[in-house]
Length: 316
Image (cartoon, rainbow, N blue to C red; front, side):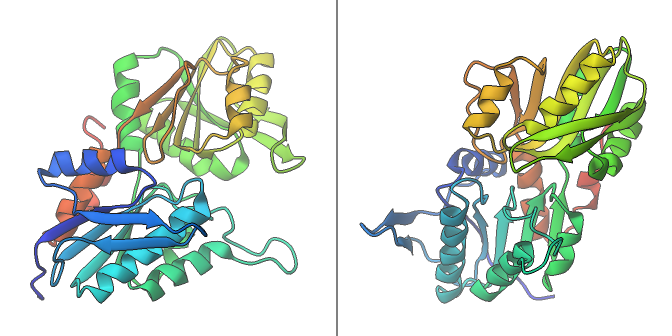
């Protein structure tokens, strides 16, 4: 087995707080870098420490502004490769462009695959990510991909709440497998909402499969941006007698429309993680940290250990 050098963790500008939390758990400091923009918007990166022969982990979710953060990641990878890092792991807590994972109409790109190609071409040797919108994106890479799940973080929080009479609901048919996994984990029943998307930010909930009358509902999804899917599902659930509605969403990439919808109070609580920066803005938003989970994965990758046990949930 090839011996890998010392660990170096580099953070981009997308989510430095998460990177610091990871370093605090590991007990190391962030690698010193210079990151700035020229007047025309071009990104400049300089690694201010020696990384020759090192095991480098570059943390930068491709959250908004997605294009800037993606290019920033690519440039940091290239800088580390040209500085003779022995292994480079691209840590993408949130993998942008994941919704463009197939050709569902003529003359459109498969941008999730393009992003995978760009990361590999830049010099990434492996990828660490969390709750991909489409798990098959792992197959777009010809390098190792470690795909983590936030369910263990959510489980610890939900168990403390001790919510009686809970039912897990997927806000669309595509998330049924995730809903089933959460229901199994929490020991409850599950169902789903059939929806019809009218445009990019508006959704119409059509039918509900599952019994929610006088019960606490947990909506589960990997991503919300404008909160249209959650709002449409919640409206249908209320009409069918749901007592209270919470949502567990790994990546809350909320835009202005999303915050406006949350202010209408259709959710009793939105439970999310810090894979992307989020400002609760006084709303019932609970942010759980995935820093410990990512840090454990980084330690195990660095030490050539399995990350499989990170999928196991204590008490389940």
